[in-house]
Image (tube, rainbow, N blue to C red; front, side):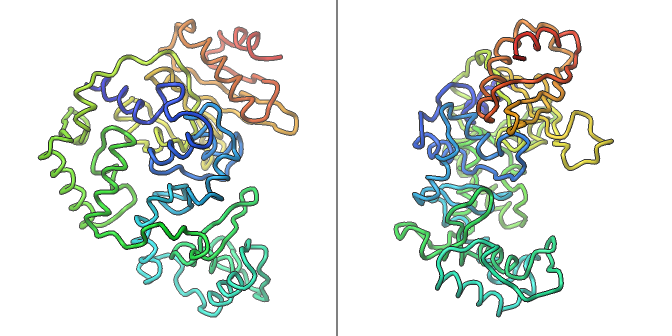
Length: 394
């Protein structure tokens, strides 16, 4: 059963076939609508997480595709469990959280000066879309929130409560505009009922993963009412025979799509994926450990002396199995992609199985990161260092 679930969830995630969502910009939108969200991250050790995650599923992915979808008003930025790109069709399901911010029901953005809020929104209304640096401030004391200036705090509050949207970015710098000028008039803006919101979450996770748990669905979404509603939605789906309850020793109760369990998924071909630490398939760390026996943590937030694998290790997925990690860095000015330290699980003794697809994937990933050559600094186990260097280093 575990092997079936592993294969099925990777298939649902769109990383078991070459072009699961098609090609080009349409494929990017299809992937995002299927997954429900793509997490945004500013770290650029290798290509940023949101682009990396989409490249994993859309082989001909170009960075401008995502930017164009934002401009086309097909995709918007907001908060899922973290800052994310979401399909515009799901905008109404962000409204409950927006209203919580507007009503002051969260612990964030308390005591923001109403005059500053008015100044920020009036300037955008009169002068058009604005970036943080477009606002001057005479405030001399350091602001709260990582020493943000008051206008930056106001921008973020107005964004979180739905008065502003991000209409584009200049690099990673956000560009804000009035929601009424960004959101297409065809989008439903009625607030979903608590049960509708629970139904949205359940269906999003089942579509993206094939199966789920209550804990995964309610991850970082607190509240007894939400949990109760999620459980009710799942119970209704069980009664309708669209979902089945699965119990496996050592795992929380699993709720799986009936079609997933009824259709046996074949063993994956020998593809290698270098996944982003924020990839949807790995972002729920408990789930990855329970299902794949893969204990993964990103270590860039740890002091150097406490890191075991490196600053920005990428999980290595070989077929249906995680076989190691690679700490790497794109030196874009030098056009060099560096493998700082490749860690292969000791159980993977037969390098003949995974070496060739690994080499091909690294070469493609280097090109995606605007690098023309590859440098290998360290490999564990060391006995495959020479093989890799002869194949990859130019």
